[in-house]
Length: 319
Image 1 (cartoon, rainbow, N blue to C red):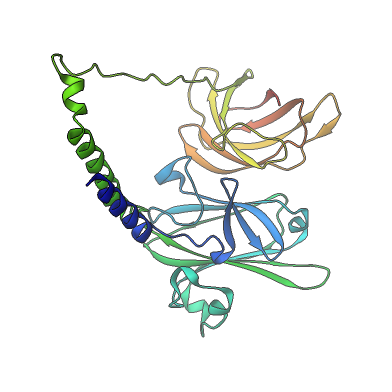
Image 2: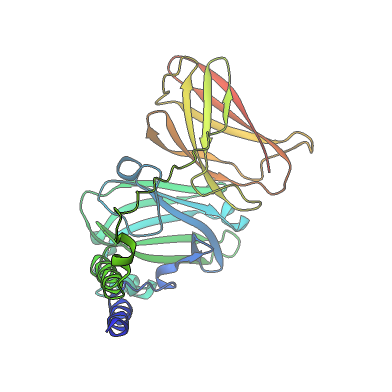
């Protein structure tokens, strides 16, 4: 009986579990990060909805309509010298998740279905644009980069959904698996053995060990940071969340922040040009485009200018 139920659950999992086509639209998942492929050119790709989801990153589908920040961190240096164009259109191709560039090119009036367009622009290390969606629905993002030497145009297309819950049939499947486990425990007699002659076992409370964020201080400001992508890894682009406070402990909002740094022992700077791409509120700022290309002692110089004051904070770290 139990075996049959498990077989049924697995069958339902295979039939109803959401399917993801890794190659659709030019965005794929590699080593737990999203990568957009613009022809042979690659960039770390992520989307934020700072007002709705804070620090959470999305690969393509977005949970709600609202302010959305699209970020590409170049993995090929050639992208730094290429004008990049970004367009979002309503998905009217009829191909859904499987829309490709040829389907976009077949649209008679592209401007009529365009909800956002950013003119071609050259950006060093990190490309970022912000669009506020006013409605949910199916959309297509189109990224184009032009080779300045040959004039060749490279493009990537990624269909995505705004208002995507991501639950699908998962609640049904998980509920079925829990039911099977309960039936197994009941039919095997384990419940009776566990509770025979005694009260149920005490609940175990697991305490999470919280690691304090590294902090750096200046006379005017105190800066702490966290790395939502996990601990920094050599030669891997990642993001920081900067938290800026005054010396009195008040969050600093609306500040202009610039970042520089390097390795003092080797007398060289950062290999990229990190910059703040979003203010998250409460003194938090998202810093994208951070990469360290070798192990050792690094210093990050955070220059802050607010309405009341300005100053620089040096954040030290060793990889």
